[in-house]
Length: 442
Image (tube, rainbow, N blue to C red; front, side, top):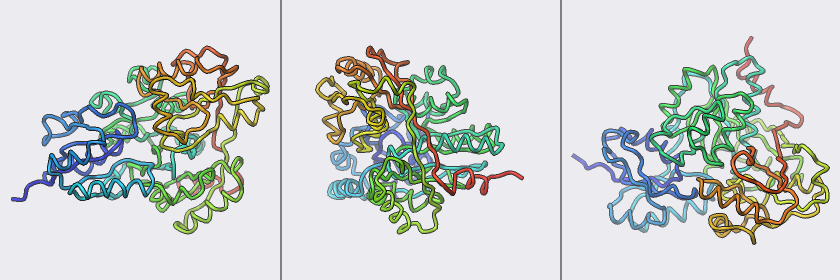
């Protein structure tokens, strides 16, 4: 009898666990010897727990830093490395493949057929070509529109963000602030869940998506998949909407798995057309047509809202932006900078000279980040570092352009304002027209 294939799954605490659960957990032809982890701080050094890993893994599965990958391949005589994370360039993927091949293992990507779960309810999925394209506000808009179409039980399911106790986080349901407190959510998790809670919607996330889907099917009339980074949906979709960003023209064809998302899309939303150069909008549209000529293209904007525009004028401001958008999304700025410029701030204060500990390390790791502060908060220590960095920066006003009220979680001493943004379609077709055509009721 042939020995099982010895496998490592290279991931970032998200798709890696889903790929294991769907393709390998009950597969007697495979033994997953380890996960490796990157992108997210402090997620290595854990174990994928035995209670989730199944009968072949009574001791669970160790999680190592990706820096140990070549050594692990040799030590464990690994046959295959499965690449299972998102929002990296095609060049990055092949550099890692070269490293794996040189160490003696095969390099493999799992396709949608192996990993997408079939739901018993209709599914609208929202993805993107890059982190920070506007996927979250598009997902929220789809939830609102489906409710307007008469669906009372619209339930969102978010791409995984399991940064704590994996066994406890297997299936998570968020419908209140108390739910987020109970699950000890990080800033990054709250940025995704809180906007749904504020609008009175329910959102699920976790680790074990077959178990999540089973629970969601009991509650939902229709499911909205809110993707993470530029990853592919975990559920088979009846309508796949993908968001593209003309502030980064060409990225839709150069990043994994964003290009796959683009090629799979039924609808592509070109977002931020109100703030991007027209030539960049045209370039993105031409790239869409080159690889997916049948996709419906929707133009969209993400208009900026603040509570007191006059108080920004003439002030020296510290801008706090969404963390993942600036880090592996590789943006130098976000909605906060747009708001500061639009409402005539005198100066955007560079926080980098005042950054402490893990925040300073973030700037070193992601040197493309501009003179803005990424809202990094993967755990209490990093949240404390973020708070100290904010309060050390000599600003008259703090502009908080994260999707949550950051002031509820950390102590911000200077006056602050939130920057809000929601998707708004420009012209036709609209998302409502497309959703009504697909899911409208007589």
